[in-house]
Length: 99
Image 1 (cartoon, rainbow, N blue to C red):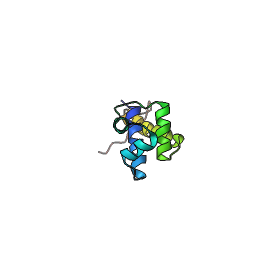
Image 2 (cartoon, rainbow, N blue to C red):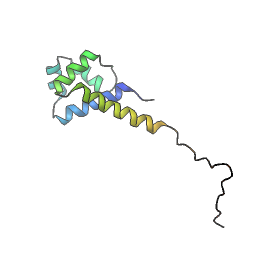
Image 3 (cartoon, rainbow, N blue to C red):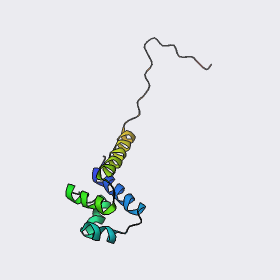
Image 4 (cartoon, rainbow, N blue to C red):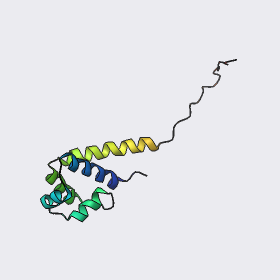
């Protein structure tokens, strides 16, 4: 099952690390407890829209970019979890024998 909160946490952590910021720095800038941000990054807590906006401001990344990255990650996980279709031969098709 695809969990949006886990993928959101992965994207937020990647954005923070890309900028070389610590949890403490993001916490101070966003005015959100360090522990809560850590839980969001680990996919254990859901981020409200207000909190997400604060985190994006602290990371200096547009909310739309974060949501786009999460959407792409969701699409990849969904595609990976789909069963592989089995090819079906058309009626009357002749299959060549290797013998």
